[in-house]
Length: 289
Figure: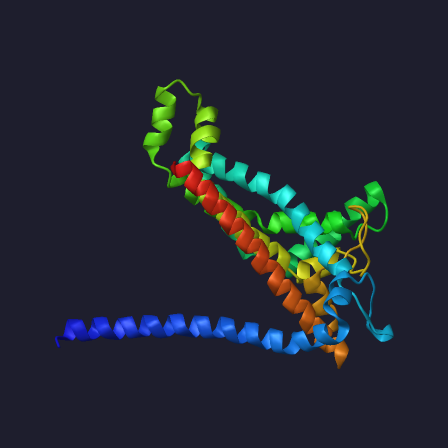
């Protein structure tokens, strides 16, 4: 065996080992969460645990419905705020801005992506929360404040991936649309966006994962009240916040129920990702036709 062949075989083994380590770590974490959380679900009861509206561990009440709804509402609010801004920014960067503006805005987006989540939370606590309190009252810590902060935090993911997807669309598509009489905007919204839809949906899926899994920023601005929110100005508590706030002093069934919350969160994220991936594939297949 020559030296080059030996090096190639060694590199293949190293790559294989790296891939196996990643897979093993994912399965190990998943197994650990399920081993620690499933017994609590069995003891409390799946229906009582998921649909229970009261979270009072001291009284033996372990209902996480308020946290489930809080996570869903906050994530939907973040997407309503972040997705349009992110996609429109990506359109501007890929199709309208000149090179100097693109270079500058890309650096800004990269800087935004590098800011720690606790800094976002602190920013929301000292700026957004007081503004909401001044305009609407109620203290400001709310579902709305959480959605605004998360909407800002998911922007770098949506902008970067969506822009890359739009730039990967062959130029001939746009040129053909313009040659047939389409305007610049028509070519963007009727040709480029549909062609880049798979990548845009992928950015939304990753942004959803970031939003659902965020903890520190939400703890600072949400109010952390384990009650079902009925308006955008109510205080909320998400699944991740519930785990982070109470895990430090929980024990026994209380601690196991927090691991069970992680199980529900894990399943919840997998379902959302599965639905979006399947939908993006169908959209991509439809566009290919």
